[in-house]
Image (cartoon, rainbow, N blue to C red; front, side, top):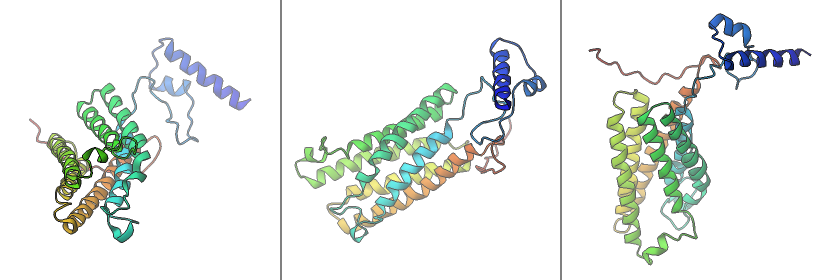
Length: 257
């Protein structure tokens, strides 16, 4: 009976709001019951408030990037060689499609809804990056086979693909200079990751040993970027309704005009 009364009370409170009755803060507390026992339930939810899509995009990006970064460092591979005959990329395919790709693209569309042009562009672009990267991993497409066994031509194609994402990341870095230090560091290390990974592809056929080392350096920068992005995404989840913990992002002091 107690649960039934609570449900009826909640329904009554929601009906009052949807019927257009204006309730102040005290009235709202009286009509809407608190659900403090459920961590996923924010007490006294404002019905017109939109959720923050940033954590979804950042965490989706961070998880996928972290896994790929480990592989690019040669983790678990024969002789720790990310460019050997035993390739690591195939294992990241699912994450690239669903977390880095789909979830992050959804976050970008949600950023559009809240009026964030920067967030929309960033999340949709990197969501598209992961989806496009996954295309290289589909055997039936045989993108590498289109180069007719010319390893240099294929590695240069990958290098061009990566260096253009490096340039785009630099653009995002400049556009983020007044956000916070955490986001700036995400783009800075992602810029370095794309730069080193692209250089590794450009020199892979002529300087294979140096290419492996450069590729591992790119993988290390990728992992650092992923850690910071995960922290940034977690910061958006640390809200006062559900936890006492806070993840400071490093506010940038602006000169007031």
